[in-house]
Amino acid sequence: MEYRRLGRTDLNVSLICLGTMTWGQQNTEAEGHAQMDYALDQGINFFDTAELYSIPPRPETQGSTERFIGSWFKARGSRDKVILATKVIGRSDSTWFRDDGSKGELSRAQVEEAVNKSLKRLQTDYIDLYQIHWPDRPMPWGSNPTIYRHQEGNSHPIDETVEIMTDLVKAGKIRHFGLSNESAWGTMTFLKHADAKGQARVQSVQNAYNLLNRTYEVALAEVSMRENVSLLAYSPLAQGYLTGKYLDGARPAGTRTTLFNRGQRYENPTAEAAIRKYIALAKEFGLDPAQMALAFVNSRPFLTSNIIGATSMEQLKTDIASIDVTITPELEERINAIHVEHCNPCP
Image (cartoon, rainbow, N blue to C red):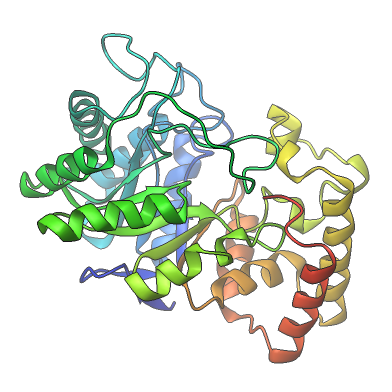
């Protein structure tokens, strides 16, 4: 296993991070424990979760993934072997996260409630990386989030959020903090406020990055390189679409799109054409399509850790083995040619 430095911290995290969001709906507690056992044995020291999980978000399963990790820590006595990342929700209309039924927001009271609940579920007294799952301010989510359309709305100032995170670090509840689903402007604004007052600095951004969505390269990659803000890439297989299992409308039993109908981001004619070409390219080079897609993400100089998620041990073993696949200059040139032809069909 390869290890890379997380931001400007003294933590070295595994190139592959174990994603956990299926535990609690698609995976049982026992299956989650088995995945953690195998991942740790393979040298993976970085686990990612969230107060939101499991996915899709539901009141009855909220927090289940953290509870599974907590019971594994207790059973194995392995907390000191894992760099643990979790998340607090951003602004949301969901009312089941907070005890008083409030809608989600990044107020001090809500963040403190969230971190205390996560610590309890995880059966630990500290979190290595505490991430803001999505911004508190209005953002252009929708069919094409790469087109910025300004929106006004309620939000807590970023400098206040930096202060809250700094206080959590001082209290010993978290070691570092990061962002998720964030823009270049947002990331730089967090850094500006932290650097101006000597407060806790953003160490990472967890954003989608895969062969169908390379928008991180447009602005955020430079932020990662120049400011030492680690990219933690999620959805490196584009929710499994890059394996080809959903081509021609196929819906394999037990898969997320089949169970929950949540794959719309990766369903359009341009994406399907691109997927076919990436799969054909992988076969031409004698590679498993999933491993080629993961290896491409692994090879990016602005990438610190690649968050994989699996619902079976077979998938987990295949995904972790992507660390042994090399993206040669010739293969990268061919990948980039497809990217130019079908540029970011699923932003």
